[in-house]
Length: 321
Ligand SMILES: C[S@@+](CC[C@H](N)C(=O)[O-])C[C@H]1O[C@@H](n2cnc3c(N)ncnc32)[C@H](O)[C@@H]1O
Image (cartoon, rainbow, N blue to C red; front, side):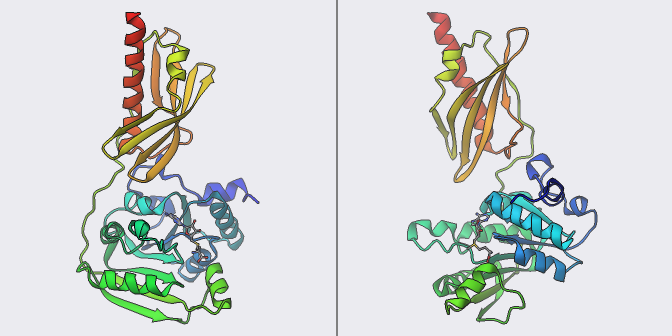
């Protein structure tokens, strides 16, 4: 069941529409230390955590819309004001959305441990994630991992212990926890042990970001653009360095065309629409549609340039015929 529109409006923020990095003081209309829960599932723990700490501001990051809806309903029901939800891939958004040294605590409970070797880069014990934490956490701030997988807890503990930016690792087995998550209750019922790792940041260090804050350009296309040239873009794929753009679908609109596009920067993938609009004077303009507004990464920028180039070549070929 969807939450009420007012609950979504109140709790779900769209960072794509805000200037980045986020300004929590503006968002919450008060200054307070900031905590983040990554992968909050149904949001039960996030609501409880925020209720226990009314003097803190909280962000929750999750991917599926179902999780966002469930958490927004819970927040509304509980009357909690100090939480905002963000939909998207936290592996990227944690670094992209928050200022260096701005977080007091980052929590992950029962994340997917990615057991296969080839997926090790997705684990919280990857150098990339450690770089993100070393950037967004304040000095002495905490990263907390709760998991039912012993090997994952031990591996992550060893990883952070060997990383000079972090110190004071504490690994607890079956800790007393005043509130259990949905997954935790399930694993405890099955007789599994729970591990809680607490790691403290010693040496903050800035990490590079992939979302520049500049606006996206609008490009003029050749005026002799025809339907077959645009239609031929369907299924096309463009690659430059780490940026990949794919045109999944070409739809005819009243005033031009809409191209359903997927752009990826490494594995940060976004689906959005490129719009080609024919103006009354015959000119065609190409731009990124604003619904849904993507983060303006290099791959999104590249998709515009690649399509402009492909259509310019198609027009030049048509002119020569
Ligand atoms: C096993 S569930 C645990 C949910 C909750 N923490 C609990 O303990 O009940 C893992 C959650 O992490 C979320 N998740 C996995 N990868 C994510 C990512 N890259 N960004 C945001 N959320 C992610 C999933 O959508 C899922 O809801």
